[in-house]
Image (cartoon, rainbow, N blue to C red; front, side, top):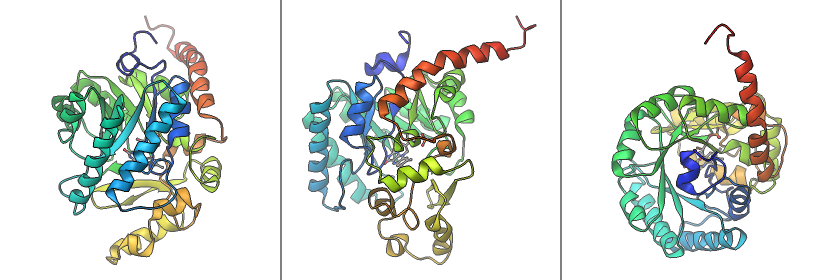
Length: 336
Ligand SMILES: Cc1cc2nc3c(=O)[nH]c(=O)nc-3n(C[C@H](O)[C@H](O)[C@H](O)COP(=O)(O)O)c2cc1C
């Protein structure tokens, strides 16, 4: 993959980025991915098993995780910062968290930042001036152009198949990646529905330079997901996920009692946090797979084993050639 732009940009061997996932992408997973030749990403609440609403404690937790990653690998890795939208009631609070976490991350000298859930211009310049490479998550071609203008190094195209919070535009990976490839010059990572070599080859064919995978890494030995969650992912089938409407975004989750009750509660104007106390924490950390929220992408239906992060990456890279050969064999023979 010598000619691969994402590998060159990030200083990695393979164009596979482990996506940030709230609560479950801590230092062990991140270092395992980076040591295997991909790029690991610390997510929000990385390594934590208790909830805190204290800004400084959150940032110091992140500092400890960054130091742990550095003790486990000398390879590049990323840290996710949730920017926060102006429209959100919580944006002021959210910005206090992201601002302080970025300060700490810069003190610790991180090589790459993944910014998401907010406008790219808020932190890009600060990060770039500190020599940090910036990957920014987008859901439309217009957002990708805005991110390119703001100076980010690469965009992550988030398709609707993916797990976690998705844009209400509902653009799937198949649709958004080529549109973004036509709209910007910077490298592109395809995200959503990609879990194996077939997905990597398809993403490259659509115009991406690499992939950004979340759901596949939930079911790895190194992820911090509760064992019940890993089991739920490997047991799930093709119709296992559903999106729940969260006003400004949709959340793609594994279907359970939480996703069934959620729309009713929203219609009644009930506070979800009130009825389901910290629903993601409840599932991902405490293992309540019935009443907790399990963000999860549609690719879960293809995942049937818990393996190591290195096995995920190695198997994708090993199978890529075979997938390409099959592709070649399927091309109509009379086509020059
Ligand atoms: C459990 C879970 C938690 C997530 N949390 C975050 C997050 O905190 N920040 C973020 O930018 N994206 C988050 N995402 C989205 C992922 O970073 C990624 O873009 C998505 O998982 C890609 O699609 P896939 O799940 O089909 O691989 C989350 C996804 C999952 C499945």
